[in-house]
Length: 134
Image 1 (tube, rainbow, N blue to C red):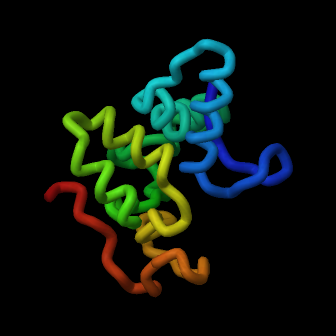
Image 2: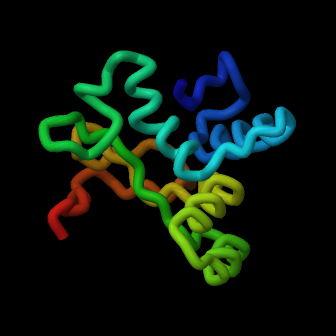
């Protein structure tokens, strides 16, 4: 199973909104989708569904580096709520439930920053990718 975005099958390109929607619909079915499971389904789980887990889905050496960088405190509400968190699981839940287009601070394709989403806070091309060794 995987979680992804597709306006043809949903109403958003936001992976965070898709995670929130998945959580809410699973709650209606009396299933508690944990934040860890949700983020797994949006990354390596989705890659496994597409039989692309050898190319994408995590940061293993040799895989394609298409990823987004999230701003944990993109809104005052997120900043307030995150200050109350006591675990990574709680922080991931806040990101999934309260995150929106303002949460996206950078987007990388093949390890190179890309631009093109007005108002999303994506840096111009040429901004170096985060060093995974730091």
